[in-house]
Image (cartoon, rainbow, N blue to C red; front, side, top):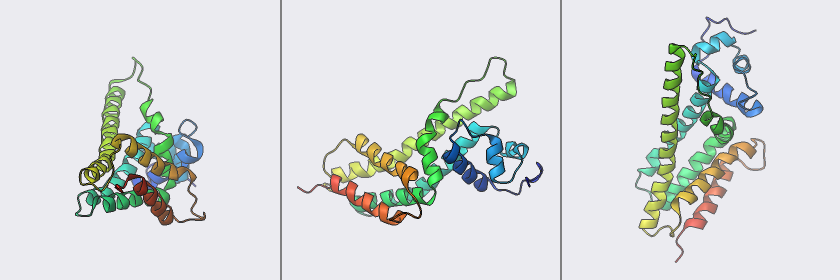
Length: 217
């Protein structure tokens, strides 16, 4: 039985995880707030108490996933490890994180476009709706800036490795996007009961990317 609207005992993390799982299964366009509310046994009215609409909920899912991995990776970047060991640990942290929550990883792959394509308000929208919309757009822009900062952590370590001779010369931007694209797609194809664990997959991917980048000369 669904909870009454006044019952707010479900926490934010429960809602975000449920939303990611529903989005992974149904896709953004087909998903309704009622679907997500049902997944955590809330009424739709109660879910709207937490999130104004589906766009805001999608953004919150992506923000939480990005914040979590940045908090894991930043200390590695600023450590005294060698450049290649930094990159190895960063790859492993990201890939293992994706395998621990494939729904968020898949949302990062498939629903970024939905976040970018949010429809503008009609000219007849209320002042309150207009304020909420502009606040959402500003928050969405901060998310994309934060995502760029996340990518910059990898670019920084790769540039550092090139400068100290650990890595060969390469197009840092293209290499980084290739690396992170491979990481994110793990959320699409990984299965918890598959042949390899998340840790084993992460180690194999780290070996492959480091082999391609190391300066063997």
